[in-house]
Image (cartoon, rainbow, N blue to C red; front, side, top):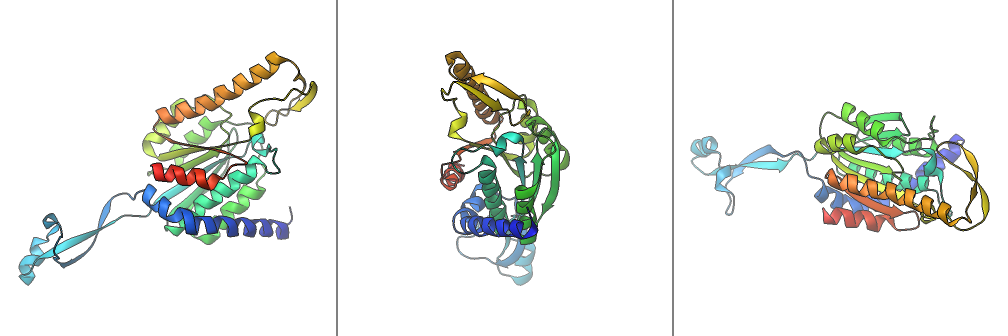
Length: 287
């Protein structure tokens, strides 16, 4: 992709997702994710209704008039976007790849965090962490994140969620808001998820395509596994082949839902042809 085309794509995503974050998400985001606590702001004269426990007795004695300490929420937070860039993210059947929706969701969350003056970091992962951008503030930083989401080429096509979570726990020493966006066609990450979700406010956003749920009966078909690169001839006319595929698929999906819920992490499921805005808003409001 040349620079001009890339900038055009970045700008298009910025316009769409910034509008969503400005008008829809920023308020919900602010109320859903709390700051680290309360910090002292100022001392002012006591007003009717003020909590008497906040009276500053030293200042009150000095001025011979009641004064109270004012506290504000320590609002600055850190958001980390963990984005799956393995081969399976390039799947799509409705004129839109999973990767496109993943990029839009990540960009929308990044602009929502920016609206609240929070830092945003990015982890792109396959079966290894392929790129890490440490958390920073500002529009230019968000645009860099969007550029990487659009054009980064992974070295591996496989997925290992456990490795990504280990990296998160190793790099983020303070509590962060973490959105892991993936199709979660992976397993054996229960233990690392438990550790990460104890420390961070973690949400798994599963992006999937309806055509992945089952194989249609098309007879003998040549299929490519996007994660292994393996090509094989599959008899989709066989009922047992179709049933085994569905069983394997639903086992992975159920593992994701159960593992995240058990660990106290949030869960969002959105199909590529659904409105992810509605799904995310519903999630924020239910928190």
